[in-house]
Image (cartoon, rainbow over all chains, first blue to last red; front, side, top):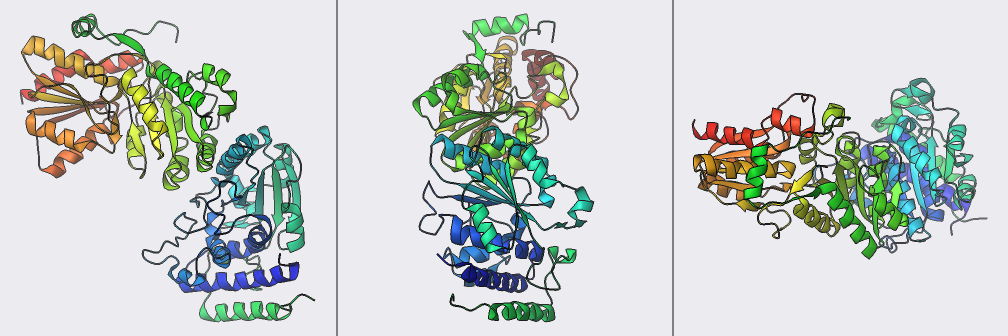
Length: 279
Length: 333
């Protein structure tokens, strides 16, 4: 299993690739893809028993990306996992490509079609219930945006997941505090978020959503028996590129040629600081 | 809901039913509940999901017999459909049961994305459909569901006409392995001629005839049949009656055959005249080049008058008498 340092390098490479394919497509959700990359990195490289070989197994873990707009990050990670050659992402959002701008099962490794917000948690609640019925042992994960939590369907599912004691379900909130209109706290305040999940009967932990070891520790096992787990991952939108970090316009901004080069140079500089081999 | 509901049938209509040898059965909803219990008893993967609707869905005995195979989500229809999709995706044979009015409006996006687009083989069961809730009013009517769901790709729409079709449709749904919407009312329904023959997706020829044809679905089929028999007695007309349990995909070959062989077609449905069975038939006809005299009957584009299902049917001419008059009028033009 790769160590933290190797995963830190992977995250930088994933950010680089995400920008590459967004730049190539001329479209994409840049800020939110960059904010959730460390979460996806830890999930796919350390937590999920999901590979191209296991993807048809009924007892594989399930990951549903409810914040489907950050699909570029997901596609980059799935390519790295070997679900398809990364070069196929040349067609992202292009005419007749199966790489749509939101997750679709046409792409190997994608469990469910998402993109309309507020759908992932109900689906995962059903998957987790099914797993419990069969004592199948798999875990179910979903990634939610913090702005997405204004959708009421999330809270219908949150109530049901606690009611049915679904400790095989984990919801991760990519809490980057920005949505398309501006600060989530200004658009529709959802704080205190941890208290809300706790009040719905969930076990809750707040972590640094860019800290590989904190994420690993929080995701390795259910937080508490008989309760679904909510991981509030505090993240920075546009993480890893100085001029994109915490700036709302990068929600679906596409970098210019100059911005793209600058972003890559920052990421390459960060990569150069991490040795390829562990000490 | 204090006063007893008036009968769906006039005295004259009941006499025609008797002459046809029809027998009054149960509500389709009850047949559905029995069939589902039978399926669930035989296969532990069968799961019903309800939104505080097990009573309305007649699933009380089901819940008692197979308590591990029913999931209650509370009054939360969006979650109902999302949970159903998730259960189906991990291998369950899922029936999501909720009043049709809420299921197909509140959860429309979940039906479109989580069931149909993601291709999770959920059977959506709209109970107390159409104007079954009668005087409870338009919040509780589903007169939009065919239209809304016809516009969703990868979803079969079925509205059984009687107990026979209901049982066949439930059994077919369990092995369908693809998204499907089933629509049931709660009025007791008559048997029909030709019960015993059911091919999923196909029209059922209930009564032969070439002067005109009724193409009807769901709980209106019996009224079309009674009108056809009445018109033979009073006017000497031979009226074909087709039950069209599957609204989508439409058995257009049966529609085109009726157009080629009959002088007029009247469609009948417990749905708004916009976007349902009638318009589906109209589209098939217009694109075939056939142009029979044609009339779509159903609920007009308005919120209905107050009344029971029987009152509403009569008010809008969806009765033996009303449908007979529609045929006479159409043939005289």
